[in-house]
Image (cartoon, rainbow, N blue to C red):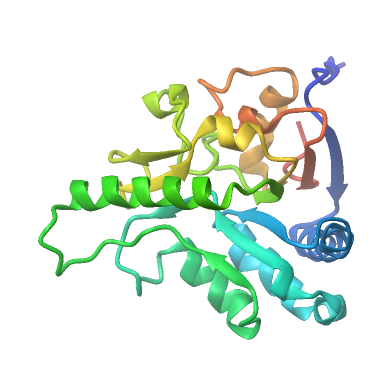
Length: 249
């Protein structure tokens, strides 16, 4: 008989759907209903999104949901938790994928993309990366946003945003960090810092697939963020949205 350890008090709540298609549709519906509530409560709402399946599965499901037309999207500000530091028109960029999936059809949304690499600039790649980091910090400080909601995912290695296991960026107190040696391509990235992610009002962690089962199980019982950075999201208000394979352990 396998021992099932209880979750840590800071784990949050979990919702399990049978498969990834139903997961995406469920997250989309929940997202739109929550946006209705948040815009009514706060007027202007700041939402943080990541890349991966958020762009390829959840946002298309949002676009297809009839409730999408009921949202006053002019009240919605979209921010990115991280970005690949490549050229602005690269299909690898998280913002480009999100725009293609949903926001191109919603021009009234206020988008806050992170900086892109400019191959024609006189600045080096590293200099541009640092300038992009400082500019996003400036935008955050200028607008002083409260991040009401985040749709985030987790890598198979347990990384969140562009915060990777064992990297010094996990100890950073900066609002935005730069990553120059990502173990996943491309190596240069920008990311919100750990303390910003921890302070988000509502974090939804959307995970699908059996490859996510082991890191999820470890985070559930208190794995340290240094080993599994997605543990930064584990707190009582976090909602873990997963399919059956991801929840299998």
